[in-house]
Length: 77
Image (cartoon, rainbow, N blue to C red; front, top):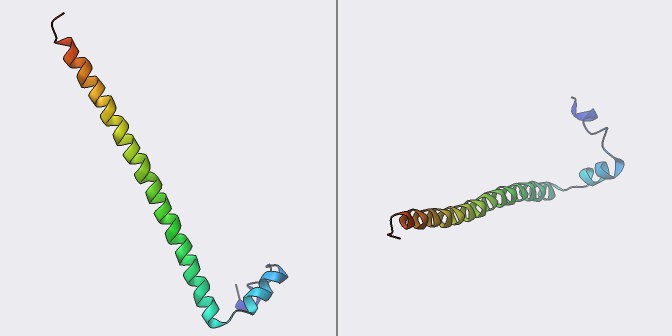
């Protein structure tokens, strides 16, 4: 798509905003976009880390209960 018609479908308010940006503001905007992506990535990692830790804790408890139950089979009545 040619650059002249690239932004024709954007709202007028958005076009005015983009046209008024200085080069340093464009750099700041790009940095902000990268920051938001990084935060989303770290957030997803932390979510699965917490889910994994909770799963491991529940698995250890379930394993302990199973071992105690099996040891109970070998106790004399």
